[in-house]
Structures are given as structure tokens and as C-alpha cells.
Length: 603
Image (cartoon, rainbow, N blue to C red; front, side, top):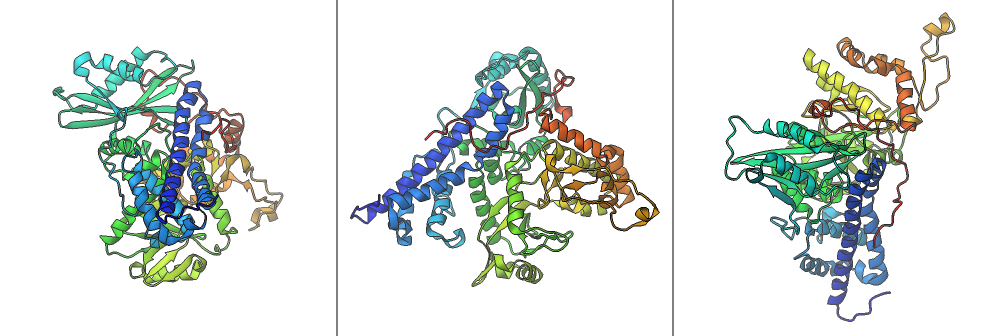
């Protein structure tokens, strides 16, 4: 029903109210999904947790579409009047004065505004480019974290109370045994000799972090001027009861636990900014945008990343250049040397022998976004209509963009507009890393390359193009896959044995004498095509020779279909507590492909 209110101010108020109601509905559904994760964990329904992680990614866009349709239905043509939106923004800011998620509501405003006005964010003057409401010191009720004081009750009693306060609906199998191991691990955090200060305390975020088959209790030990962050991994043992599996305290391991190469956490929180501030205190090198993203608030993460990008552009002067490494046949990849990310643009026509198109490539990137990345696939930020200052573009890069992706380019004065691109954290391409690596580094990184292929296979992913140039080495020395145009579900690939030559003519033939289907893969050929260097081949074969056997791949396929695949921990096996080190981990059921909740989404 179109509004007939004569006061020109009232349509602006109506639009602002509908926008905020649309966001509030989104956050209610987001909260419902995070609360459901605790119930699923207690039931041991890990497939439901994985499914919820996947489905939640699409919640936001669905609510944006709903809000746009409601505005068109209830406010009508007034909502499309650009002159109205300056007033709408003012009304909206007033509504956010006491809102517990103002920074997320501003992002929702931006998303709806771009759809309604059909103008890109780079030239939409009504967007929240800078935050209007400070989230600093926002006080959730109840508080975002709990404080415990071991000097009062003793460390063992304090830890027992912490475990009890999370209110799991499943008992621990042997909490006393687990706490002994936790105490031993926590004591190793604090330098010796240990002198407990008056402010000695343990702070723990009030809600568990759920991912896959594990719940993480996240906090820090404070003693005087020192702070020691940690995460405690809780799993369901074979008995169905809970067991503490690991204490993660090394800053490197914590950073990997919260890496964007993993699935987003499910965490119940009323004031996300309070959780982000706490996590920033634990991991100060992590940007805020990445923490919001890891909490499942990826749209807010994108918004914050763009603010960081604009800020960096303003305070830097270097040029965007083509990224080092082998040029891609599908993507144009460029970077700003002073900014630790790469920008990827899909070419209009991939170079031979690639046979694909833009929509196919975008579908592969969506697959990765919704899949368990297992710490082995880079997460991507997808943007439309991003403006770059032409005077900051290297001439060679500009020429390549104009020659290979002209359909994605618009010129607007002194700005070049890229209509679509992906942004990823920059890594050293594995092939370039190996060129200058020592023997020990080659041994380590090729061992990890093989583990990357194994981890991807365990999560039902086959990378397709296994060339070393398609993998990167992170700052922690981990190997991560980042080229997705040939990615496929492992269960859809046909792993074949190499046919034996029939005669000498077959043996000498440069072309295959047998038919090869589009999904056929011959693992026995991997070493010849992806490991041409003797040093890298030797390092790989020392640890992963079975990956050249099609039988290994078929075994993994069978386990996936039988739902007997073991989960991949987000921490090294060496961190598992001694009490659990000899226990096998419970098999993780394979998530279904259904993208709809079986339950009812609340209004």
C-alpha cells in the first residue's frame, strides 16, 4: 500500500523505520541460528552445525531483498527519490542511538540503499562510509565476558565453575581428569617464577564458539601487566559425553584458529562489537573486519574492509601493479605492494586451454564460500563497482585490464570502475616460494602441500588444477589453495588407473590412445605434471607417495559417501591433551546439500 501521508518528512521516517525493522529481523534470525548451534552440538548433530554455517551466509541477502520489496510496496515511488535519502539517513541515525548493533545496522542501510537507488557505493553520498555511532564501551546485558578470580577459590574450583557456567546440556565424561590437564597447560602460559598479582583473573567470553564438531571456550589469563589468551576445545567423546580436547594458547595457533581460510564460527552474542573488542585484545594483529567476518557477520566485515581500503589509499602513494608469479589464464591478479591483499578480475575470455566463462567461475567461488574450507582454501571478499584512482594504476596493469576484461571496466573521470572483483589476502605463490627455499623449507612446505590435498579431499573437494602456482604460502608457512575455476566435489571425480600400453606404438605416442572423460583424473600422472623438479618431487614423495595412487582417492570417496570421514581439527594434534591423545575422534557426518532449514525461521 503506497503511503499517502502529505508531510514530506514522514516518508523519510517510514523508510528509516522499515530499514531498521528489516535489519532487526535479520539479526533475530542470525541469533536463532547461533542458538541452534549449541543444541546441535549437545545432540552430536554436527552435520546440522555445518549446514547452519552454510545457510547463514545467505540470510543477509535474503533480508535485503525482502526490505527492498517492502519499501517498494509500502512507500512506493518516494523510496526511489534520491532527494529523500539524506533525510532517511538522519532519521536512521536517530533510531540507532541506543541500538545494540549500530555498526551492523549501518551496513544493512548501505546494502538496501545501493539496491534502491541503483547507484554504486563509490558515488552514493548517502552511505555510511564512516560510522555514525561509536561502538566503543557498549555494555551488553548480560556482560560479554565473565571474570573469575582463582586466588579466591583456587584454580581447580574456578575452572570447574567456568565449565559449569556454559550450561552445556551434556555432562563431561571425566571433568576432574580434563581439568588436571588444563591446569598443566595453563600453568605453562605464565612465565616462571610465578608470582600471582592482586589483579590475577581469568576472563572468558560468555558464549561458546561452535564450528564443525568442536566448541571453543575463548578467554585470557590476566596476571599483573601480562595477558595470556587461550581457547579451550571441547568435543563429544565416543561415549556421547563431553571431553576437553586441547588448550590453544600459542598466538600463532590462535591466529590460525581464527583464520579466514576456515568456516565462520557460530556464536550467540547480543552486542557483537563487545566480542570483537575482546578478540582484538587477544589477537591485536587481526583487523576488525576479519574478526567480524569470522563471527559470521561477513557483510559488516566487507564494509569495514572497504573503510580500511579507502584509508590506506589516502595515506599511501604506491601504484597498483600486476601480482608477481605466473599469469593466470582465467584471472587478472593485481596488488598494491603496501596493502597485503590481491585483487582478482575474471577475464572476458579465458586463455586456452581453459574452457570456461565468467558465470561458471563465479559459481565455483560461491561453492568455496559455502563449503568447509578446512583451513586450506582462501576466503574471498566479493565486490561490485569498486573505484580505483587512475593515477595509481601501473600502465601495464591498466593495459591488461582494458585488453582482457573490457566488459568489466567503466571510466568515470579520474577513476576506473571495476564492475566485479574478488579480494583475497596476499600469499607467496608456492612455485615462487620454492625458487629461493632452503632444503629444510622445501621439505616442510611440500609436506604441507600434500596435507592440503588430503584436507581438501577429506572435505569432499578436489582442487582440479594442482599446479604449484595455484597454491600460496601464508605468513605462518601454511599452504593454502586459492585458484577455484577447476574445483569440484571429490565424489564427482572419476579417479582412474593409467591404462597399460597395448604395444610399442602406444608406448611412444605423444597423445593418449584411450578415451578420457571430462571428470577423469589419473593420479599416477601427478608427479610428472606438478612436480617436475627433483628436489620438490623427493620431498613430496617422502610423505605423500600414496596420493599418486588412485586407490587412495577412491577410498576417501567411499568414506565420504559412507559418512565416516573424520573431522579436521583447527589445531595441531600435538596440542591435544594427554588424556585424549589415544582416543580416536568421532566421525563427522557429511553435510547434506540442502540449503534450507528443517526448522521454522522466526519472524
